[in-house]
Length: 283
Image 1 (cartoon, rainbow, N blue to C red):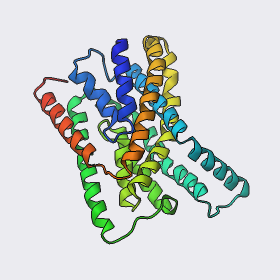
Image 2: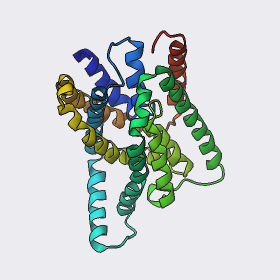
Image 3: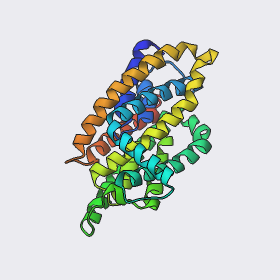
Image 4: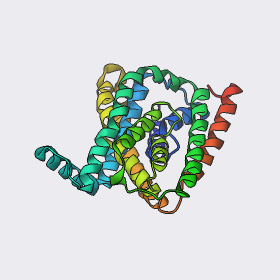
């Protein structure tokens, strides 16, 4: 992997991790479309990708630093007190804890089985098309739901709802399924507004990305990965800057818009990539 390729992937990761278009899907398909000659299924490539994810997580921490400060204080007070209160930040904090459990468990069991998907552009393109259909279906069901029931605030999300969003986020283990897209759709179906669904999705993604990164980063220091260590470090910074700009844009976008434009993008790009993969133009 050249430096130019690494930096382009870093920019791509920083944008596509938070936009509901699947960063893993793009990390697999774009090199295939450009005929870059490196093995996407190699452990060192996965470690490089995880380093880029760490940059994204750091951008989320900085962007939501005031939220994390309030949530951290409220969680700490709850633990010291030994009971729950009516504080909204405290409940959101525990909702994040509960929502993280499903993806942590599934990630531990499914990381290695799904890694083989990284080598198949056709499978990834198919998942990207499925990602589009999930967003279309979610928005359609959401519009039907709002005709009969009003939205609920994030702090009122039931515990079972947090688990459901966590399971939805777990779908992002499949390259082509968007972490933010799946969890935002789950939040919408639980009657959250687009703003709150996106906020919960981004907050929920942060500890998961950080934990996954810390587990994979040591692989960058193994002898066979020394060639991508410097690229990973610089790429993480580039991904962080791109991700910060992305989340700033998306928080404004969801004030007045929905997921459908991203669904159309995934459908078109995924269909094109699938056609090229089936025609053996890309592998």
